Amino acid sequence: GAQLLEYDTEDIAGLKEQIEADAICVHLNAAQELVQPEGDCHFSGILDALERLVIRLPGKVLVKETGAGMSPETLAALDRIGVTCIDVAGAGGTSWTKVEMHREVDESSRQIAGTFADWGIPTAFSIIAARKTCRPGTCIIGAGGIITGLDAARAIAAGADLVGFARSVFLAYREGGVHCADQYVDRVIRELKNAMVLTGAGNLAALRQVPRVYTGELFRWLSAKGWHES
Image (cartoon, rainbow, N blue to C red; front, side, top):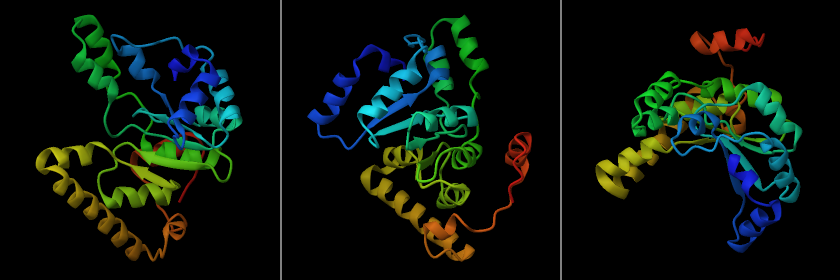
């Protein structure tokens, strides 16, 4: 997101049009930038720059985190400036602060990155917060720790329109190439369908309406906000 400040809005829009892209994805990864050796930590003005881009490219801007999730306050700010597609990319999957910890050669900087290795808001809470906070019709993508089709079903039931996963596909590909990656995706789809059958959900819209019970850490997060989901 900090790189938005380096370019004129028209230049960014022009790049999208030149390559005939469907949309532009803006990453919000402050935690990673803060501990990255070459990180860009100039964050002041990002929201205004993002708003200008949203106005210039209505419905064509996806805003995503990269593994630290999004708070209700951040989600409200994005909704206020008209962002209609959000990938919450919550904590629970790849930690990019931990990645930077392993990249860092300076011991003091490595320790700082290690302090924030588990920083973030869980994916499930971020999804629920997005559905509660953002205007109807906002596309919510749930990512961060999605491994199985049951994980995908839970994310959709919590309010996600789509789910995203990268690490698991990469690991499958590394193990056995394209064939193994395809097998993994097929398994996820079968698991998702099984979860839908077991909950009586005939389609994804119905899956978002199935009864839900939240327990453990997620329940504590919801209770802290005064959100009594069931």
